[in-house]
Amino acid sequence: MLLYRPFEHHLNIELGKHGLYRAEWTILYYLANNESATLVELAQYQRVEKPTMTRIIRSLEESGFIEHIPGKDRREKPMKLTALGQKVYTEVRVTVDRFEQDILEGISEEQQLEAIEVMNAIRNQLISKESSK
Amino acid sequence: MLLYRPFEHHLNIELGKHGLYRAEWTILYYLANNESATLVELAQYQRVEKPTMTRIIRSLEESGFIEHIPGKDRREKPMKLTALGQKVYTEVRVTVDRFEQDILEGISEEQQLEAIEVMNAIRNQLISKESSK
DNA sequence: GGTTAATAGTTAGTTAAGCTAACTAATATA
DNA sequence: TATATTAGTTAGCTTAACTAACTATTAACC
Image (cartoon, rainbow over all chains, first blue to last red; front, top):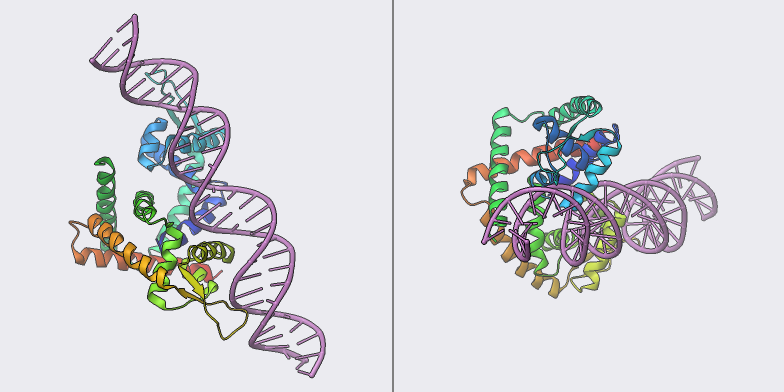
């Protein structure tokens, strides 16, 4: 918690240079690594409700970063990055990478990996608690 | 980030049982461990702006969990937990402890400590970046 | 010692990002 | 075929942050 606030603060500064919000960035990130996704898929991944995702997606669409593609089901509206979205993702990736390298300075790779593992384990505990209720 | 959302979600559920918000809980926590504090001190600790802290404090005051004590400076309005605040803190502490134990199940103490160390190191990097700009 | 700086805290108004409840349209299932 | 489920949207609310501009008090400078 004490970590999250300053982290988000700095990340937002980096993203602000590109006119992006954190919530939008996570979607670009997902689509850059997954080709296409539906709203429900994204909402589950980010652990937010559907209306929250609707708004984020609309904003990305208006910026021209994502577009809808036809899905096998007429209820679904899968989406993917546009060429512009790809371009912006790649650009932002550079500054975010630099930022991450910066804040991880002096921490061994081994320690980083172990910390990530611990956090993943906690996340999984949390998620399994959710579904079992 | 993927960890923070489900974590905050569950913590809020636990705290909600006691009619508390996360932002309020962190202040109770600080005051339970520090006897007294000023608004500025709390704001710096939590990395939020003063008006944000004003609101949280007012709410805690209205709930009767904290009270102001005279400070050496008439600008300052230091505060401390009331007897009720102490009582509530202790009660909530129990459920939060149980919650934390729950989500850390299966992670060795050693790993936990190392992860905390890594997170502290990152936090310090972030904070030092802030002041050097 | 009096004027200027800085500091503690407040007020007013805005914003990002989440939520719930209630809905439509399309598909699956009993 | 009627009912239930799923994908997504709309409307309205809430938490927790922010900035700008303010008052009151103390510290510092010449």
